[in-house]
Amino acid sequence: GQQLNQSPQSMFIQEGEDVSMNCTSSSIFNTWLWYKQDPGEGPVLLIALYKAGELTSNGRLTAQFGITRKDSFLNISASIPSDVGIYFCAGFPQGAQKLVFGQGTRLTINP
Amino acid sequence: GAGVSQTPSNKVTEKGKYVELRCDPISGHTALYWYRQSLGQGPEFLIYFQGTGAADDSGLPNDRFFAVRPEGSVSTLKIQRTERGDSAVYLCASSLLPGSTDTQYFGPGTRLTVL
Image 1 (cartoon, rainbow over the protein chains, first blue to last red):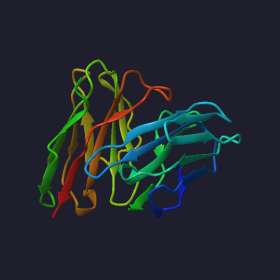
Image 2: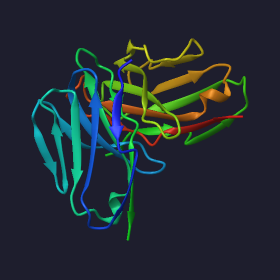
Image 3: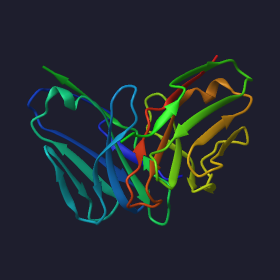
């Protein structure tokens, strides 16, 4: 089945640092989404990308839909303690209605 | 307004037992999705409903898994003869319309533990 490769698997950073994570696929995706999941909760949508090359921001978060439609990245600037959690990329493969998720990036922030 | 709710939040059962997991979607949302999330992994698609009908059940792992949505609102995921490998968090999501441009809103999940 479709798979998304998300990296890194985990990050340990200092408060105030910028963060970057990415997601790649071997096949074309029509939509790229970035979610955050806190313990005991379901994923919450952060940013949605619908067109190749699209660059979208949501506060300190910026994400881009790769021009090849096979990758996406998420940047978080000036990290704060509440950014701690697991970030997932997800997307709809071309021609499919099923949302596919990456393995997640666990972000830990040292105060 | 209320988000997606799931009950129970935790379910512990013994191998071989039958379990039902319930999902209450956001009112008015026509599309409902079930996912399974194993420890340290991203959610994996199981099934999605458009109204009362299962539009795609290709993610159900085997015939022990079944889901219904008889009135186009609440959905129940049913697992027969549970196995230890069924232990996971089962997530439900709903969207106003199906498709890749409509945001899926997730519930908090049901953590199933099969002993």
